[in-house]
Length: 149
Image (tube, rainbow, N blue to C red; front, side, top):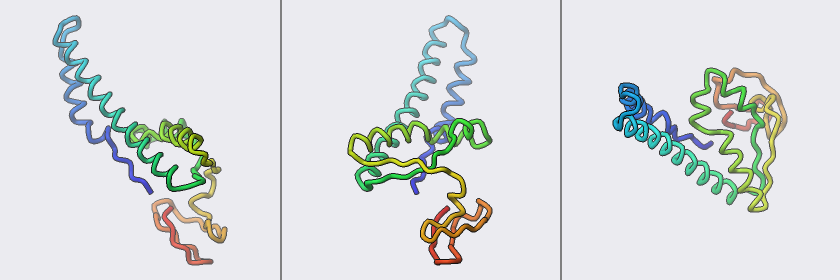
């Protein structure tokens, strides 16, 4: 499990303040240009922080494992749901691209797995038990394996 640092969420207040300042400026004035550059600088900083995190995590995974398996989620559809802000903040699609090219460069394999039943099937014995997703710890009743969903 790798927890996303949520760079956008941390910078949201600063960004909102800068955008409010920008909206108060008159078009064509030098103050507006400065305010616009300030907002752009904040967005660029967030993007650079996210990209740096992606590269570091991808490198760590590629160095540690020969085969990397992830769910083949429909990220575009998820980014239109109620969890869209968090998905965009984590930058899933960009991370998977970076991971794929780093793995290929290092001669590692990246495998996409169909997301159906991945949180219900036990990877050890294959037993399927339906539990709600809010139950984050999965203990298999067949083999006793304890896993995070």
